Amino acid sequence: MRDIKVATDDGTAYYDIVSRLKRTHLRFTSASVQEAAKQTDALVITSKKEAAMFGGEAAAVEDLDRDPLIMEGQLLSRLLERARRTMLVGVDPGSRIGVVVFYGGVELGAFTTSSVSECVRSLASIVRGVPHSALSVKIGAGEPKTSGMLANLLREELPSGSLIEIVDESGTSARTRGVAGATRDQRAAARIAFRKGVPFQVAREAKKNS
Image (cartoon, rainbow, N blue to C red; front, side, top):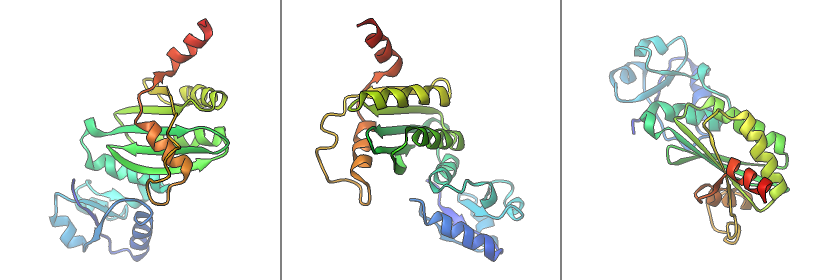
């Protein structure tokens, strides 16, 4: 993967870029505008007024989303081949809804909410903001009412072609070890994301015919 370079002579833009990058998982280094212009294999982040100096290949900080999770996805989309821009989401329903988002095989971020509508709104915003070639959402079946509500609302909000699956989540909360800083709900969501599920439409029709 290409290096990320922060290159700008604008002090305000530099502080903005660095402070926002520190809230992501991305590694980066700083370089002078002159040095960065010579490194054609690096992804340069700069100010909008300086972006033209890099032949239109640089990312302007003003064009990046303020949400660090979405911003990280936008930058990764420039570093990954189109076929690798796959988005995988794990959702652990309950009174606290844990969500983890993976993109191109790496974790973009996680969040926890107690609101179904907020969960759907946040995921829809992420999906709209991050370019992707495929989207798969896995929802744990432990809370059937919440799972069904989430699946129905997400089916309405997400692009057509998105895969929504209901997953058997037994055992996903049993272990306590996981990513540092992640909550129990988020760790369960991460395990749900990588389990095989039943497509939501199929699950809904099966229940209707039973």
